[in-house]
Amino acid sequence: MRKNIKGLVLITGTTSGIGLNTLKPLLRFGWEVIAVNRSNKRAITISKDFLTKDEIKNVHFIEMDLANLDDVRKACDEILERFQKPINSIICNAAVYKPRLKRPERSPQGFENSMAVNHFGHFLMINKLMENVLSSEREIVLNGKSTLFKPRITILGTVTANYSELGGRIPIPAPADLGDLSGFKNGFLSPISMANGKKFKPGKAYKDSKLCNMVTVQELSKRYPAEKIIVNSLYPGCIADTNLFRDTPWLFRVLFPIFQKFITGGYVSQRVAGERVAQVATHKEYAKSSVHWSWGNRQKTGRKAFAQKLSKRIIDTKTSQLTYDLTKKLVGLN
Ligand SMILES: NC(=O)c1ccc[n+]([C@@H]2O[C@H](COP(=O)([O-])OP(=O)(O)OC[C@H]3O[C@@H](n4cnc5c(N)ncnc54)[C@H](OP(=O)(O)O)[C@@H]3O)[C@@H](O)[C@H]2O)c1
Image (cartoon, helix red, strand yellow):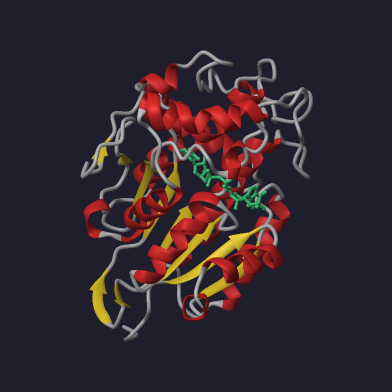
């Protein structure tokens, strides 16, 4: 066993919002970080503004456009070559949400783009790095202290993908639902743009991609036993003022944070959300596989995270197996 190995965590999407705000707590907990972004130049400039000189020394930057599967492969090869030690924890955070599109945007491989970025890119990345993560040291050093750590994968889920919660049943444009997955079965290329093969609904395409993220967590935790790796997801709360909402109407962008702060009480600051993500990905209390961690939809001071009940659409074994196998085929892993 190698000694004095500092913990290494990888996170996607650190140019803004939750990802950017997860960096500081990870560094404070003593981790070395691989920040994965589609533009290193932008990621480095933003990190320089946000982090101290000492903090940034412990961040490595890797360029990966999650929309492009060739790019994901290339970047994973670079990660495997460049780092002398395996990754202990992966955080899949990056996402796009474009609820106003009239027609689907297409990824370089021809897939509907939000599914490509949010689900396919992360799915391929996880699979390419899985062996590496599984081989990571169980004894690592964090802030000079030796710590036992089991490999972990954490994916950002959301309330709107969970039909068991009120937020998951909002009918505008429709709740997340993968249906019979005929869109995936039939190759998911134009004119197909939805997992269920039905008409394009941009807001639902985002929800479906997040549903796929949460289904992937369930399926990974069946395929890889909890003794080997912890796979979990979380809903950090409604961070109503991040760039995720940049493509919504301007009035929505003004009113949504106010609504979440003063009406629903669901608003969470970017700093608190980052803290939550960092904890779920690295702390002992969250070392439980297949759990979807939540702090609820109404934020209350001092509230602890709990295992959120998940809808049948997420935990149904047949659906999760099929989603996983079809995704494997679509991203070229068979
Ligand atoms: N905000 C919320 O209320 C909320 C609630 C529940 C869950 N979440 C989840 O939290 C995560 C972070 O969301 P956020 O609110 O922090 O959004 P955000 O501020 O828009 O951050 C998204 C990040 O993803 C990156 N990204 C987008 N497309 C990419 C691509 N093709 N390749 C690589 N990176 C890409 C963005 O980079 P660029 O700067 O290059 O675009 C950015 O760094 C998402 O998974 C979201 O679904 C958010």
